[in-house]
Image (tube, rainbow, N blue to C red; front, side, top):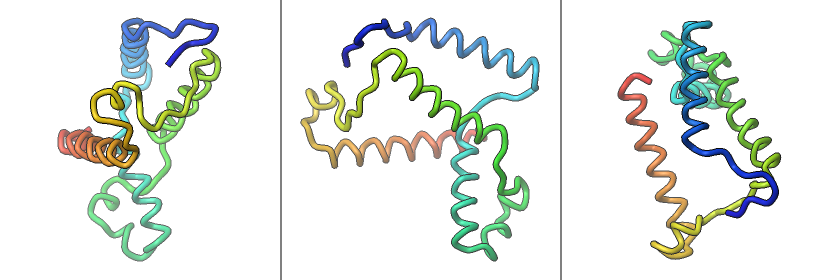
Length: 132
């Protein structure tokens, strides 16, 4: 992806700033930020609309509740902030098969989508298994 106009941030600078924001979050609000719980809560909200009599009675949701909280707003903010940042840096592009993937595995969108989905499920399972 080529940047037209503004130069993208160094991933090292962005990572360091994210670490500073995390430290401030813990210091000021006593909260660690994460995203895996949000996926479970969104699934609960969707499930509740499909089976309102069953989902709220699940052990997990009895303990935590089905709610829109600061963490869900954080995840929504990541999506919106990323979009605004990409537009601002003129680096926005919709790419279904990234060049590095295409070079190594070919241009197949279905294969790429399947691998991305399975990788996301494994990462989410690992995060939930670790309690985060």
